[in-house]
Length: 151
Image (cartoon, rainbow, N blue to C red; front, top):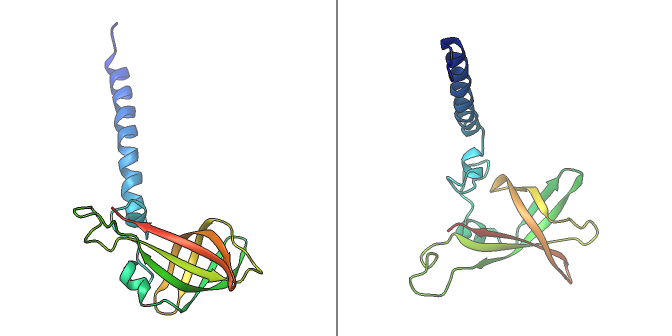
């Protein structure tokens, strides 16, 4: 089967353009705020640049956070617990890391939130996104948990 030079150039140009398109999309996405976090290259940070880890959250136990999301009124939630989820096995990946932990918030039962990603705001930490899961009811309201596991 003979291919003309014109058809070869036309086909080759389409291949080059289609191969270059994902690179362009990737390059543009890295210029977006939070793209490196989404890609897993770095851990999440807040608007004021502080890193969200176990020691950061531990400093703010018993303080209030504002939770908001699409179609949800902003509610106040109190951080009541930060649990270290490190493995107790010697030689485990997480043995010397503070990158495996959970946070537990309590909010009023009058406006329950579903499982999902919410915008979280704190006076010292700034604004960031967090995936929250309702875990159980307590005498003070509904508990919501977020698990951080960075292996």
